[in-house]
Length: 365
Image 1 (cartoon, helix red, strand yellow):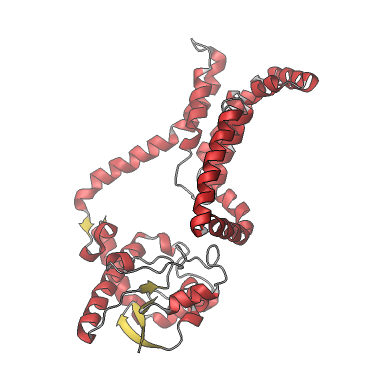
Image 2 (image 1 turned 180 degrees about the horizontal axis):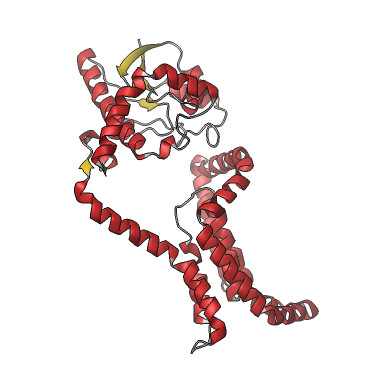
């Protein structure tokens, strides 16, 4: 969207754009000719878009609600700029229509309010798949452009625009500063997580009471497994935001540490070495942690509702070739059951090993 806008507004020369496009096309064609990566990528993207189309509108609403402060202020600033420049906009639009003038069209598109509109729309669409990842700093260049085009010294009528510029730009740095100060102030009282095998993944600290809660839940999940299986069958989580809760994330890291230790112990006691290991969960860090070979055709981020498409024969064969397949149990959830069900054709002919209270392992006899 932004490149098209820049091209139509005359900020990018057509000749340079075409030349850059041809260079990229030649590079992509070479990659495609060598290993078919580009067509495979496009195919996956089309499949994922088809799986996520129904979730686009709800996620747009989520973005608008989560970042309502910035989006509302930017929207109000956009309306104010358009209203103040409506006469000039109408005149330039009429001139462009009468004269069929590309230059007049560029003058319309290369205005602060039009850039703010493009950047705001691009930010909303981007955030539908990456909620909270860029905090709408994408619109800051347009805000700066609006600020620079205001007359100096500022007049009384500019007070509203200045207020809306501040309301759009300030929430993000203030929020970041607030969180940073809280982190620095409270960090001395935090407890570091002892998971040495996890390396950088395990560089986590939390409040002592959260650590106690996570340790308690690691004991509770196996003991109350039947209850969590009933939750999974009913299609609900024990907590609506379970996967976002800090104590769950801490307990998950500890369970992965325990699984890595148990795999090494099992290999040592049974004279085995699992070269290819896979965990049927949303993420699978064990190949990295244990420095083993990851599976090439395994989806990165197994989400039954968004990314786990129908598996082809090559994927089933790839999973079946793994030396060890881990099934997470802390807790059992509908999503984890759905992932296991999707990969069920790859699990036949294996022996079940109770690896840890939080993981079962399927191995070849």
